[in-house]
Length: 141
Image (cartoon, rainbow, N blue to C red; front, side):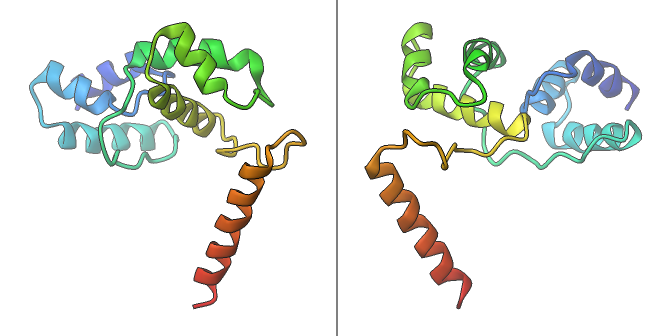
């Protein structure tokens, strides 16, 4: 536990959802055991509990940091398609840039989308309206 604690604290405050795998590999331990230990450590530090990741992160820690450094100057209202701009700058797949931006926004406690922006294209407004209507239909059942 002490070894996991020491390694985990070296990774703070970086948002790395796969840190349990990195530490597990370094200590030759199962990532699930390391994840459990990390949550105990976070509890002692009075930090919120982490949810176990559903799948591996689409971007590396270095890619995430690079995307964040390019994305942050555009906050709080980045241009539509910023993931395409960043992907081109970093020579990355657009989907990976999009996933990373989602993680960055989540880590900053921001909404996933800026749905109420004035320059939202009509097609996106329609998609959001459809999604809201479908959600409302599902809530009433």
